[in-house]
Length: 303
Image 1 (cartoon, rainbow, N blue to C red):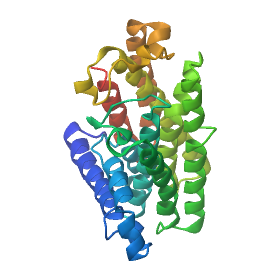
Image 2 (image 1 turned 60 degrees about the horizontal axis):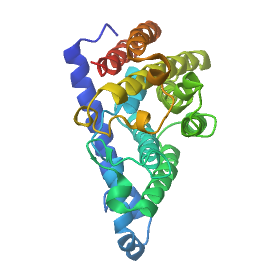
Image 3 (image 1 turned 90 degrees about the vertical axis):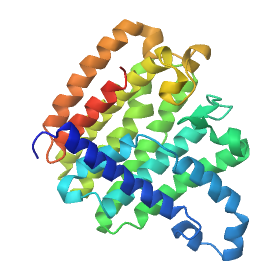
Image 4 (image 1 turned 90 degrees about the horizontal axis):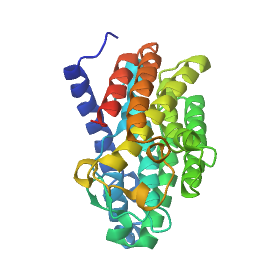
């Protein structure tokens, strides 16, 4: 695939986001797969929970993780069918992590994606259960993929490890503790899931294990870039721009790249990390050109 132009990428990304959003809306609709698994009367009793899940799972967002998966899947993995379903599963894990991250015991945030956070709207107990449901249902989505059994097993393994104690959850724990090991926080809290996104796309494309590993490394490095930008935005951007509460890291005394190195150095680090990610992406086929543009999109958030 030749280098993706801005226009080509924008059209592809819009179509990919629409595919993932449509899948999520269908899955969580009153007539969707989740509801169909339940007795009709039980489903009616759980309408409040379904509505609360939909509030978070279908909230507007950049869908960076699904885009990484779909880009890595390339023409072989496609942007329909199994690839979109796997991308939706990944987005459910991300959505659950945001719901739990915003809880009073964690970051105690009021704003997410430009809207009140789940626990502010539905209550803390329901928000916890929303996160639990999203995590469980993500693996139901993977288990029902129209894909070879070995590929499904690989996808489940990759996502479970990235989302668990050795990945995203472990990074969140380090963050809550105020760990001075900021690079480890970035690698686990954000890098693990983006690494999984790229690796899952590579699995769906039928790549060999070595190529899957290269994709995973690229995604992980993209996660570091994403978190550097996130730390920077939390320090310098407004809530209107980010869609979430600004300045929360400083108010809570959290260790971040900015608190450790300062704004100017983090801006330089963003540029260095962007160049590293782009080099890694450009060596990948067939999704490298789109992954390279995603690197640009993440970097450009810094302004």
